[in-house]
Length: 308
Image (cartoon, rainbow, N blue to C red; front, side):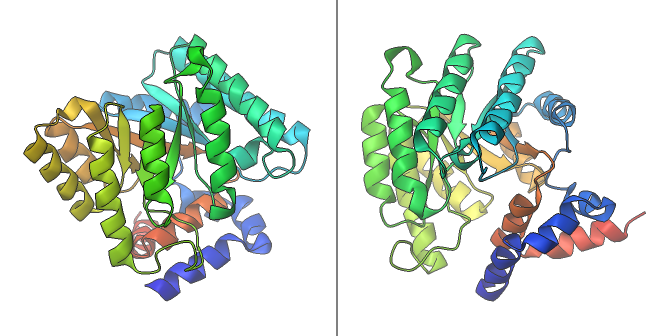
């Protein structure tokens, strides 16, 4: 499995394959299991369908590093439109944003200003912005930006962040974020990281996830546990039951198209579930990382592609 994971991550960075995939009918069909569609209307339609099943949503306009300020502002405009459409249609959804898509690697100040503007827009519509975490080289700058925006008194509670359990530093980061009252989405991590900064063994990543989950569940702030791993979910459920923690104080988060059966069963048990719904034309890197996280998805997709 580690070999397959490395292979898919390498493929996610292949520009020729990405160009072919994102501009072909076959590629669009291939991605449809995990990506809502190419346009905003596709995302809003799927969001409405998921809401009807009793689940919350977060919408992600796919795209990563931009090369200039104009591209960053165009990417931000999509999110501003989403915030308006979510409010107008009374959808139960927030937004998830990557700072590299907002210009982080070309000008951190630009990315911070765009994120601040989005958070102000979210606050004005009663919504919330989740800043996604990327590879470990961007962890500190991402944390710094989120903390500065959250420090605006009127924006407390309108911006949150993602923490990855495979990083050694994550416990210290979680403790600091809890102290600041910043909402966290906890995930395992989908980037290939060196052993100097991240646990190389799955067992250690899992143990870290459970430990960080327990810290978050004891926090008074509303957090999200992003996982499809039933062992991680069961550990959270057991901890909640043992400590008498109300199920309304946190949510499980899962990806669109992954373990729909598990999503429905958790809702039926009274847990909050949020579905991460990506959309857009730049879907290829995201799609390949989903395969890297769970290579068994390859067989699942192949079977579905062969069905009439």
